[in-house]
Length: 240
Image (cartoon, rainbow, N blue to C red; front, side, top):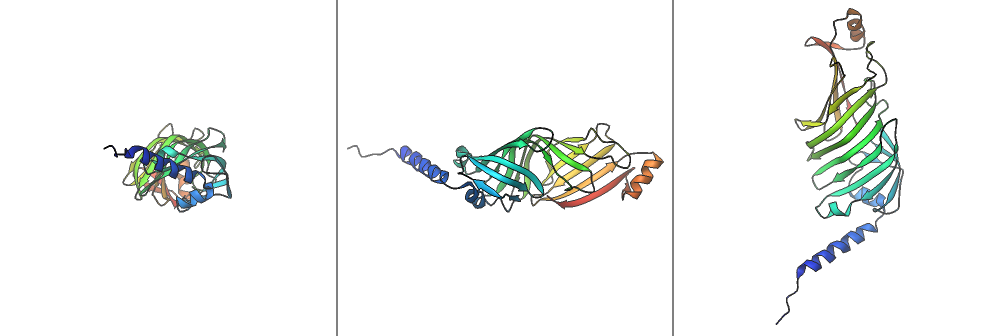
């Protein structure tokens, strides 16, 4: 008697049905359901469905990402993660925006992201004007940095106390003590910015300058730097 039914086609049909049902959702509803507003993502409008949408006037915290194209990945849904692939125009001189952000029940992050992101006065009084991301991936799990890789270059729009930093500062992304850490350094190594970002968006930046020039030291003192361990440091805290 052959009444046995293979359950695998049923399961696959159910999965495809759920994916198709999700595919009819407007992207704006999907983004809200994922809780991305709690992670700092805001936008003026989201047009079309989750499979191919246009996001208008996207902001991540204080950072303006402009208009972007977005698409939900069906493959990642099968492993319990919602991933939205992004692509967009150049935000500044440098690479176009490409990458993704993904969310699961306990984690949040960006994946394989490259972009030239203008940051305005986000890190003021530090003169960081742009962050160039090269294949950067960062994941926070339960609020702690669990994985980070890729290269970040900070462009500085002005010098510091007469020190020219036109070549910017670079670092490899990493996790340290549960926070995203970027140990940015100039080509000479005499100027460094230790940037640490928590899962809730709080950041701390320590700008360290090593110099023996009395004129530069005087300018650093007047700019609010404090003498620390043979150098001079300016500490800045804020939220992304």
